[in-house]
Length: 294
Image (tube, rainbow, N blue to C red; front, side, top):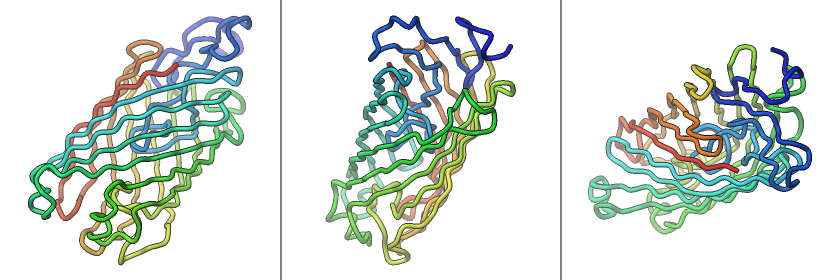
């Protein structure tokens, strides 16, 4: 079926229903016309995308006629740590995205071994913005992806601790360039993101260190495949710098499944592996995320 041949039907998109835009007389600020899940889910840093990777997508369900919003809560259970995130995003006319996320990292029993106290929690605020430059994730040229530039300012709330473990700063800013395309005929979505960053463990352990203080170029890649009109599986890989002298930092990867419960609610489950964290190896486990988008 050609895209231009339908007015109100269901197409595969990231394994979920693609529903045609509502009538032109809909509220211009709340038309809800974006195809389901073409806004992605909330990444661990709050920007729209996959679980680990930021994508070129813009948050919310509104098209270029409206203003969309989304909110998420995410939890990760690792071998020795617990991680939780919650936040919200605003998408303005499918062009600009503004987001906020709070990350909480529970050291549990490891906290005592590290001299921080059992159950010590690292906390971080992330304020982000993204702008779509060209292209469209679904429509337009079959080869030109949607391309967006983003900025994420991260602020650790544990400045004294992260500097004590060797971080050069408790605040830092990441810059991203993302390209995302959904190939409808193949039911495949592909994303590639370049990130300039000096964050340690996504920023939870500060920024820069004895090994490297400047930002370095890192890569994030995602591939997703539709199983049914509402179910998608995929995987992601994210490289990371290793700045701290006290402990190496490994690349991260995941395998995920996302299910559209309704048009506005999506649940994502994943197996995530972030490698070594603060000298403790084998940090892998389960991720569950719930997102509401309008």
